[in-house]
Length: 491
Ligand code: SIN
Image 1 (cartoon, helix red, strand yellow):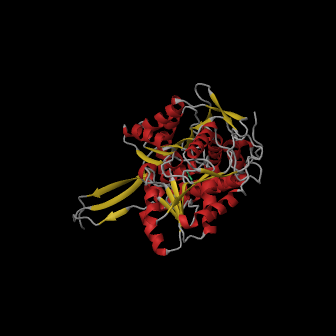
Image 2 (image 1 turned 45 degrees about the vertical axis):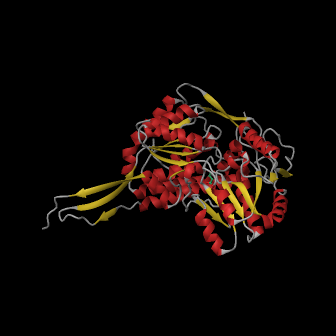
Image 3 (image 1 turned 30 degrees about the horizontal axis):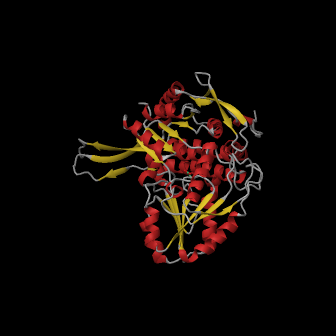
């Protein structure tokens, strides 16, 4: 067993957490958590099943009345204490993320800061859940709108951001007065459990923040999305699984928030600042080894600059260094698992078989070819290829050529997805035309990184429902209650 050399060893937990207690699975079962860079066992973690998930939900439901009854300021202070503890333990949390997820330490540190930022933001927003008064049409009545917590929230989160995807959901839920039952990805439960250690140390009451680690995603997902004591389910992951959860949640008409797949176009027009476009593309495409929902997936380059852009891109990709996440010189870590690796290899092979050209393949620096994928640039990619219709989720830049603005917009919108899109241009009229025409929830103009706690993150079409982060992120966890006070008499 690998273990992890944390300064604060209390952060390394191997059982789930609910009702304020660290609890093994009722079945006694465990599942292995592996280091994706080596395949070594880090630790075995309790494998929660249906009954454990049910217990966790019940503990959250029990905690709900007291949690919602705290003042907004009290909840805010507890969230701020949690935020501070995350910052105090950020180096350990980054090491945990790198060990179980594989991303380079510099990126893991960035993720910890990003994760913490949602807690700070929603600690502040907790105090700004305003209601309304409405001029009444009746002299003896007054009308108010109260905004109240929805109830117990279940969250299901992916492996690509083991900390930030949890805090982006749990922080607004807790701020609104809702307890949470969180199911982290099977690949990355350790960061989630460490967050629970810190939540408890911050004084967040028993039953308010619960972690359900499990390798039985389907069965536990079904409990979370059908349980009568769960009021809302918030999911980040594939569109395929999101649709199943939506169906399951419909039986009890739960509130839902879905942050699903993307297929981001990254368009570079002839009038773009090419250096800025390369910088933005490198950040967007290769962040987390290409394993994010907002990664550039289809790179559309206008014909007049296509050759110059490809050359500059290859020069930039050549500077990336594949390696172990703990090595400070590493820019690209391993793929999360064999299935992810296989998917990328298959998409590249099929693009090459269909006529795309392999313009660049980077070095693996002696890393295991079954776990790491070389940074790759493909040119002459065509819109109908699988590499353009599916999320690549790997370090492959696939370049297509286009001629006109209309053609670029048509290609960009020709997908069932609508999470993030990017484009680079200088002409202000074009900028307005294109940003308005793109059918996406997020548009980065002359910028490749769009993620921040202050802005609404989420997609349209089959990329999701609802928004996370920003002042809008709290609305998802609140119900509106119209109160009519009648029978009032004037003195
Ligand atoms: C995601 O990949 O789903 C999240 C990426 C981000 O928050 O920037």
